[in-house]
Image 1 (cartoon, rainbow, N blue to C red):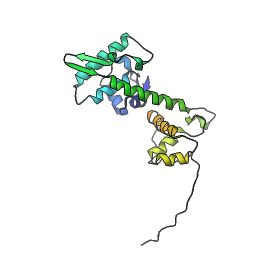
Image 2 (image 1 turned 180 degrees about the vertical axis):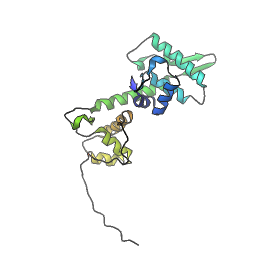
Image 3 (image 1 turned 90 degrees about the vertical axis):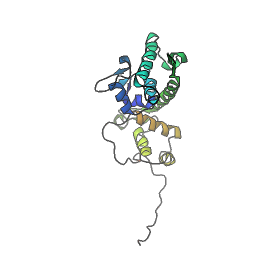
Image 4 (image 1 turned 135 degrees about the horizontal axis):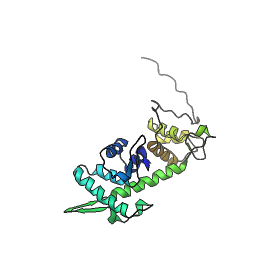
Length: 209
């Protein structure tokens, strides 16, 4: 089961869409958990993506009916790897309609693999920065890197500030932070706090007037 923000990343929707899907019972009961910390099954992510992407072409009833048909198939043949299923498992025929959910599955599978790479890159050890999630092999907090990008710093500048990181690590840091945001109110102006200064230049002030 994924948190709402993790499921939102895999489904490529906003976290509020995940909460809406849970509140409106878009997904069958076995694919989500309510409570203080809502959860969505990995298999539910492409279904949520389909529900919102097809809103202009299908009614809510048609979309939910298609989801229920697909979920019945998934439940009848459980699998540890939802992405390995036959394409036919994700196609629904309803009278004259043919609804193919496989493109949403392919997209969710791609984003799931990216998220897996991001998780593998991040470690947490109480002996290092009191357990703050850091990029493996460094003492760089993953959320600091992501905050720098979110503050508008170009990837090139972030890479210069963190020369030990590869462009791929910087990209995955942003991805990880999006799926696992810090609790509480974010800082208004994130800074490159853990970066080291590699270049400094003084610029004379232009005379007033």
